Length: 476
Image (tube, rainbow, N blue to C red; front, side):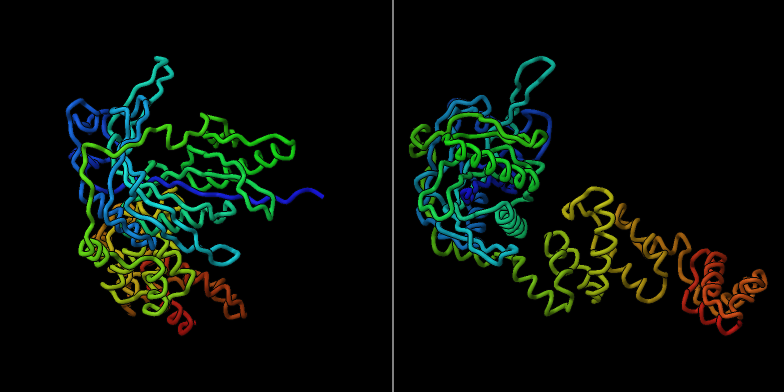
């Protein structure tokens, strides 16, 4: 009888905050930019430069803490974490060990097996390090300090997750909360959300945790899922062979679908943490907490309930629309303008999703305005353009955000509802297709479709199909 194993997983999630400037200086946090151009003496660690805390960082951290049911630490302070690494210009990182800003929270996740609470041990503020670029050609490493000093929060979960499915549900929940708060765009591919996975296995029923490893370099949900499966299998194999799992940091290589050891795991004492001497503690008053709380937006869970009640749209649609803040904002703004939630939802659910998929884009990349979408809905609804034209116009809205009314006018795409003009065309089509007329009279329904098609062709697709059908039937 082979042993049954249980996987125990905790996550450390780093999120880059959406402030305009860095955590301790006024340099830009914008992604990209030529190497070492978003820098100053503070974020390059020049001797004698002093950090000044960015208030917005504290407010974003509090907002995320409140949204994840944490207690806010009223007297919170920074600590110095000492380690030497070329992308870390001061040879220390300003972080929080002893009094992190948020503690003891949780988020609720939904999986196949129902809902579950995942505990959040703490959330702390810290600065990001620079970035090493390895130049294969010159065989050297270069350092770019643009990212150095970009504000981060690190969200440390309890070891409450038991499968890749739970981990991904938890990350998805966090990502949506943070995006809705506007605290970060959480783009895994740009590194503004990064997850390190701490994983151990133990025999089912065991009280003690097994030895854990930490996996880094995970920049997509798929990679995280594969890394969890891979590491679980590796640890079980070691235990089955009677070997020990070593506590270490491992790097996941998604192309090889394997991980390799990077370094043995450090403990807090290796970092010689001590209170940061250059920064005063942050005292957070009850009023400040309340002020941040009063600005909290409606989060996804509340939106879902409201969409079904207020707009009467199906659960599936509501889930897709609220699955991205960008989509939800577009939907609400366009609906407020035209008052047709079902129709706005259809354009977003069908055509928008199709074009996003074709272009390999995310809803966050949508650039068109709700005004133009609302105008299109009104045009199509009034029968001013038919569905074929509406789809064509929508593609232009999607790519170029054109004004649909101006475009339809300029290209002469308005539906012809003029009965006289339609009747003339239908008569011409009937005269030109005696065979189809005979087929229709002989009971072949399909022949009518052919005649409708020919009429639409004559009218360059601008006829009202309903009227064409009606006139055809009447004349035949």
